[in-house]
Length: 439
Image (cartoon, rainbow, N blue to C red; front, top):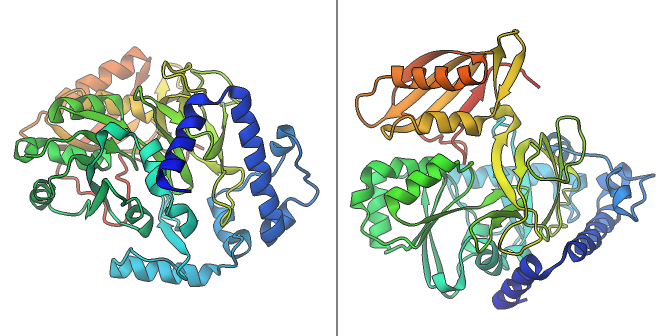
């Protein structure tokens, strides 16, 4: 398919398909990936023995896998005969040499993910899929045809051939590392005359004190890799005077993207997402916190990820005004391991989700450039603040006491004021770190 053909198909799927048509498309895609797996993957042949799949109820009975299981069985799980040790050696060598372009065996883009836990993950994408990325980006990248032509400044710790394959007529993508000094980055941004900035929220926050040095007019800012909370989004839009769009993407698949109204929708034709509540019941209605996400990638059969458990937590919203029947996301809470815990007055342990805690800190003062929270015990936090000017930590303490007190909770805090650097070994800056086991 060509770029325009892919673009039209993906737009048709999102805006024209009824709920019944979406379910039929998904069932067909699930069966295709299932049959490919049991045909060409020794791992799935063994795992699914005795598990026929004809109906969606059958699908929900298939065993769940996770990153550890995937990596333990990588050589037998993929359907293209790739060896884990050889692929890992290739990926690590590219990482060490900072040589991120090119295809493995001239056929596959290899992604190396350290994840927040530090456990490496390998992800295979066939060239046949990455070559279709321009159409996918146009349809699901948070942009519209009226934004063209685009000169994109793309920021992430590492690059890959997959990102490079987004380049096409009217789409020019320039990569820069998030480790680039800010002054150099701004110089490059101006020199490239970029009109679209793509970067994690933690990197964009570093630009705020230097916004007057940015001479280009940005049509949009697109964020990814980290949760974009409402407070950050509002501040970015105010400072840069442009629309800020979030893409919800993981190594496992492009989970959600913004519609023409600017709201996140699950990409129902690219991934099949199951959400479960705290009682492990399938969520079918909005405004219920998803405590478990099970994802199936519908388009990548080289490395079938079928009923793959992730620790992302999201909340669904009511139907969107854009008319799409793709499920709408109300908010991305974060990851289960980002949750914070406090005691109430009855000494019962209660959870506070990280997105709420972030909002309390960020909205306390514009002088807070970045922050990091470490939970050392239930109710006990070590908070590091990266600030632009002299700052009284009592402001944060008073705000947290007030907000937690309103919930009947109590916390104690130790504050450090120092510069926070973006990590050199992770794509994501981790704002919340826990040293306690609350699973």
